[in-house]
Amino acid sequence: MKPVFVLNGPNLNMLGLREPEIYGQETLADVQQVCEAAGARLGFPIDFRQTNIEGELVSWIQGARGVACGLVINAAAYTHTSVAIHDAIKASGLPAVEVHLTNVYKREPFRHKSFVSGVVMGVICGFGGYGYVLALEALSRIVIQTSKN
Ligand code: DQA
Image 1: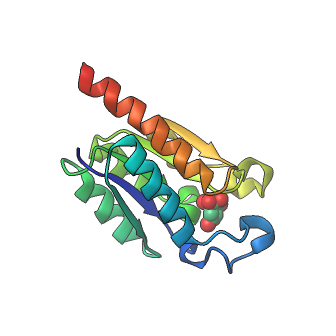
Image 2: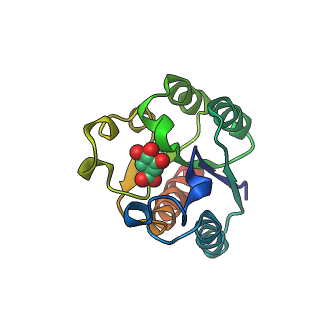
Image 3: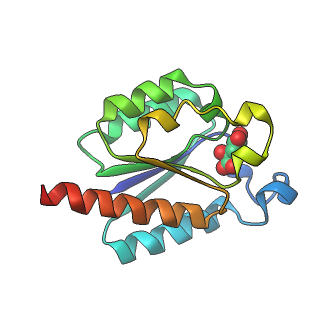
């Protein structure tokens, strides 16, 4: 089975330290661990990455084409600004799920706009690290369905 790329954008390396009243105590290493456990249960390897650099995220999405079976992406602040990430997801031709730890619709209005939502299968937000597990479960159904067609 090809891996699922779980890609994380800027400042997510600061989880656990960063605004714990908003993001909680969970670290990115904790999120990686739950993703790897979910991947093992669902039957696909997880390639888990984080970067603070927009272009690196774009290159990773491009590199997933033909290599990964799908994408789980938390583009963090770039969600709200990046046409380049929108275009890269579209060009990858891969099923993708957008994840946010927080419910972005309960937060500032500038977080209500996503350049990612229009090019993914669905969006999960507001459930912390557990949202990544939900995203992997949704993706596994899509990947299994597509492989049957
Ligand atoms: C986030 C929400 C974004 O608005 C914010 O810029 C982040 C994290 C989340 O996971 O809740 O960095 O993507």
